[in-house]
Image 1 (cartoon, rainbow over the protein chains, first blue to last red):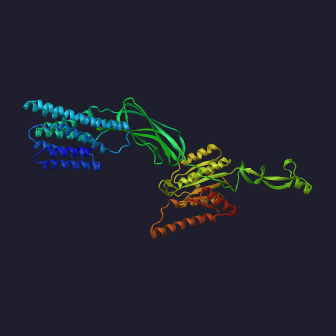
Image 2 (cartoon, rainbow over the protein chains, first blue to last red; image 1 turned 135 degrees about the vertical axis):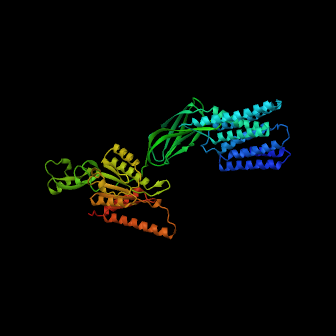
Image 3 (tube, rainbow over the protein chains, first blue to last red; image 1 turned 60 degrees about the vertical axis):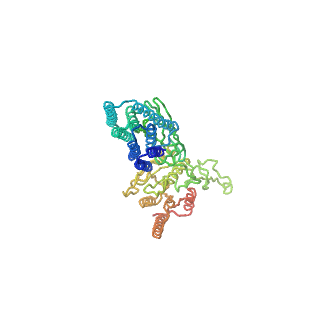
Length: 165
Length: 424
């Protein structure tokens, strides 16, 4: 299912644009192949590179696209997030059979995450469409991105420091 | 409790970073929409991180079981701080397997929730085990962190060997002084007729043989054989074993030892037990049900320990081998030290019987000429060892796949009926 979702993103990136679709498809296909290898070989460290590859294909598509915002970006984001969740689920170390309630909760979480992703993405795009642009807004955007990454990095470092036995 | 971050956390952080950087570089807001969920997931996972607190209790249905029986182990979990997914693994020795259900199991534990997991264990092989080490691994909702801990709530579980069918026991050549079920050679109070003799003052009137007295014109009385008990020592050779798959020569030997001990004790004999091998273990001969439990418990500790030390019979305490005891040796005849020790016992005048637990069913069939030749030589060597016992007047019965213990004992009985006792 994860590969199907990634394939969907790849197909959309390759077919939606009219400029250099071979390049978009090539980059995306490389990512899809890496993801497929990671899933087949159960290598979790390789999996992000597959996602990056498919995402890079979409980025190339966006880069070649004219100025308008891609209205399907929230769907692409939801598909990528769901694919990532399912793919990491697949490469997790084998555990015993889960109870039905555990499976249902986990599937609901993936579905809810994908839906939330689509909503957040749509909201972001609506906000961007409403904004008039300018240097100040761009600076706020850069600052927000850096802050987001910094918070994630700090929290991750703190979590690692407090790892105890 | 050990905490570890999964590969997913790093991956999501990296994907978010790359996405946001790409958005900045290409000035495309769509990439922010793609990257933001990964950043959000990582941040939410980190903020919601907490250490699960799960209490574990283990109860065992019963402490003793027979080979092949089922025993239920219940693992009770009480989550003061729960977790989205909890993997519960009950650590088990190889000999015990979960019959119904899975091990490990994955479940959801909410805060304050209690769960009880039953594990039905199949006791596949005899032994003394300790059951109740539980490994817990918890995962948060987003699968970014896992916590692991091991809780030791081990309880003893003794799995006794099943009984072998034994029809007739071997009769010892000599009996002891206490009352029992064996007809002694000595004359005394009993049922079995022994002889006639003239009446002497003090003889009971009910012992007078009236027919003989009438014929001879004076009083003659019947004499009887006394009924006495015997001393039996079960000698288990634990120097070496032949093992294939899940079974070994030690398993039938222990089953036979347990069955013989139970049967001899039931007929009021004193039974002792000696494990002679890498680990020396002994129990002084005694009677009663308590002795049976002692013997079987001692058997459960029996294991084959590789040992190159030369051991002779002198290492066994003298009181363990009472004079005139019947020594029943259960051995695969794989180690010369055991064979020599048994011959030494025979040389000291013990009534010895060797039940050879055949290692042949546990040996892989030879392939090729060289293996065939080696196999034949090995079998010839075993025949030679057997011949040494037979020359010393010791009955050797081979107990293998194709014969039962009862048949092996019957073979020994027949040998002892016809063979002469020789001094070596």
